[in-house]
Length: 158
Ligand code: FES
Image (tube, rainbow, N blue to C red; front, top):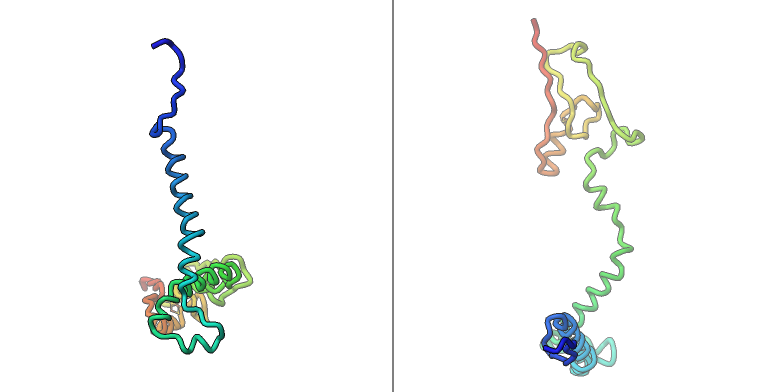
């Protein structure tokens, strides 16, 4: 060794591998876009008019399917940001109509004020006498397959 830096180009130096790999990927993508995609599009049985679609055979439709699928996916991805998102959030609401003007629905009940042995409090948020259960949970469970029921407070009668 004479102390000089080795400046020769080794084709497989470890630090060149990611760049070489990136270059190969770009070449593959370039070949697909410049060569294979135009060749594929040229072979597609695209009719000259709308009526020509009706005359396509089953095998011609099958050859068009990948392109139609990609176009449908691109169309969906394009309009997706404009689709309403409120619907999904609305489906996850528990409280649909009780005191919607309030930021939070809170009810307080003094145990001492209970004047019957059993009092049922609504947990399904469908009761018309909220917070007291009016058995609306039965209809809710039947319609949705849910299994909610009231909170029953029992008072010992001495
Ligand atoms: S009405 Fe809601 S739990 Fe009964």
